[in-house]
Length: 323
Ligand SMILES: NC(=O)c1ccc[n+]([C@@H]2O[C@H](COP(=O)([O-])OP(=O)(O)OC[C@H]3O[C@@H](n4cnc5c(N)ncnc54)[C@H](OP(=O)(O)O)[C@@H]3O)[C@@H](O)[C@H]2O)c1
Image (cartoon, rainbow, N blue to C red):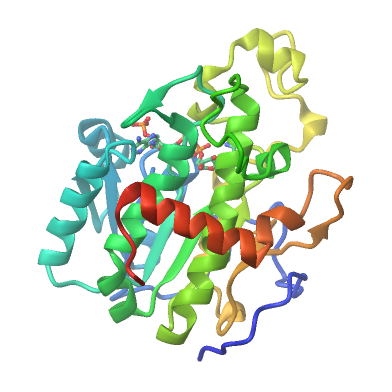
């Protein structure tokens, strides 16, 4: 059942928490007959998400920029299909979605888990900053192009953001960092875009039964940190001298890191809800301007900024399912 009312940005007492795993969230949930698309579904949190959804009976499509690596990572998991797609190449996104739509299948779950973090300054396409272009614009084009299948499946779309969104709002006056690049601000901007995307997609999609959520999965050591040196990770206090995760920081396992996205994608407690940011398997709380790095910043859930970002993204990608 859907409702046209906005969902409050407050916890609902889901019964799950930071320690819950994706398998625990799906215990007793039967996803037979459901089709999920999981970007990045062959590494880190995405891999554990694919594993958990497939174990619960879902068919999982994993669009991969490295299909051979994806097939290797996913070997032995039943019910998974690997497809070629590079989020940083909008032609590749178009080709994947055209192939998928031609198959005539409905989509019930989309989990936008793929991402890059804190890479050196990289320009793609017409000079776009790579983190914003890959993490946000690629997923924007993907979801808009899949819209007919999402509408038919009354899908849930889960946009994997990060506490990194606390690093930066959308930089309306310099989104491409033409005045100087900062890799963490660029990651932050892209992750704020992931939240705003869910806010506006939910507003546009809810009357058709399509709902959207954003989330922070927790901190998990995965290949996402590939652009950081051991020295930088030590300086940030993430790992010790031996390269081991620092226990007090509360790093999650990949299975725990996958739990919130699996919960957002499947929980019946979220029926009729959407457009909110989640963490630790529950709806998160709003964070005041100078608050801690938990919860969600006002600038990331502001409907006006969400609509403005949608308009910009549609103009840049040339795709808008709602135009
Ligand atoms: N790990 C954390 O602590 C943490 C915290 C907060 C938020 N997150 C978010 O969680 C998500 C998953 O992170 P993770 O830790 O699972 O990272 P990961 O292990 O590095 O997985 C990221 C996946 O994204 C794929 N990808 C990257 N660029 C792509 C592109 N251009 N086209 C298609 N696929 C692409 C990667 O493919 P390749 O292997 O082929 O490069 C990989 O499969 C990210 O969105 C990240 O921002 C993670």
